[in-house]
Image 1 (cartoon, rainbow, N blue to C red):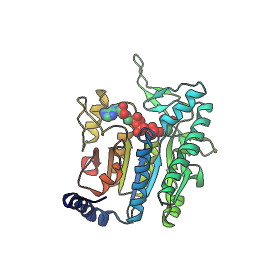
Image 2: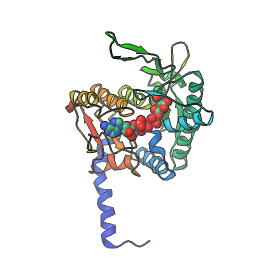
Image 3: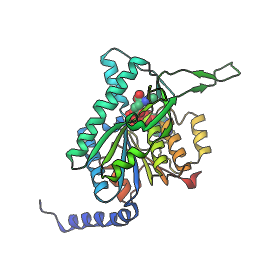
Image 4: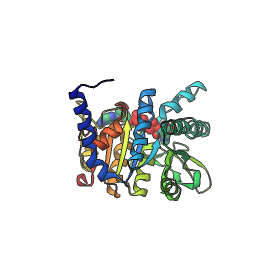
Length: 300
Ligand SMILES: Nc1ncnc2c1ncn2[C@@H]1O[C@H](COP(=O)(O)OP(=O)(O)O)[C@@H](O)[C@H]1O
Ligand SMILES: CC(=O)N[C@@H](CCC(=O)OP(=O)(O)O)C(=O)O
């Protein structure tokens, strides 16, 4: 392919624009959450894998946490089970937990590992059970029911919240130039498996690693207002208002919560970005084009 002079200049400009970002982020850890909805096409999964390999090659330490909600839903449907979601969390009975563990720890995790390796990276897949990396306990959801004085506690089964992230395994892999790919399954003190929302795991992993960035790749342009405008730089009270008036609901609830928690606990910035855009990861990290919703400690 022969490039015109203008095309060549444009490419050179983009590459050169990356220099200060490479200088700034080299040696730093960036946690990227790859949502199940952002894995829609081979083009997207391949561009994601290339971006991760590129980050590693320029000296950044990527740590991938993945979801797989739609993929779990598909297998459940095949065996005749429907899922119910409460506040963005899948109600998980024992049979559903087995499917979650098979799909996330098996199929989705190994697909991502394979893709990264095919693009020249060295990925290793883990669930939170490996090395007891993600210690979890049962999540209790409380809800204010109409006509009740006390909030009711809803039991949503084998759904967990992160109690502690043991970073030893992650650091061991990163220090040996591997790229950890983590499925959001936690282990209880008694060895029980817990299904944990992948955003929450990514947030806690980023906090435990004191990461530079937490990037949440999803299937929407960012956090949006009711008119569809992307919102950025929100404070916790602004977020509370948007939750109260119903602007933020469902799968966006854990995302925004973990982004706020992460920056409160030392992660420099959290980004909710559109994983439907090919190469969304490197566009965000290496170019001046800010995409999606950004939250930093200045917003707290
Ligand atoms: N204010 C909001 N702005 C954008 N998306 C929102 C908002 N409130 C709820 N959502 C929903 O959250 C979804 C993203 O969460 P989710 O489906 O769990 O994605 P993922 O699989 O990437 O974690 C969006 O597709 C949208 O339907
Ligand atoms: C408790 C809970 O809801 N767990 C999620 C785990 C996967 C996930 O979070 O996947 P996405 O990021 O693709 O939505 C689930 O069962 O779907």
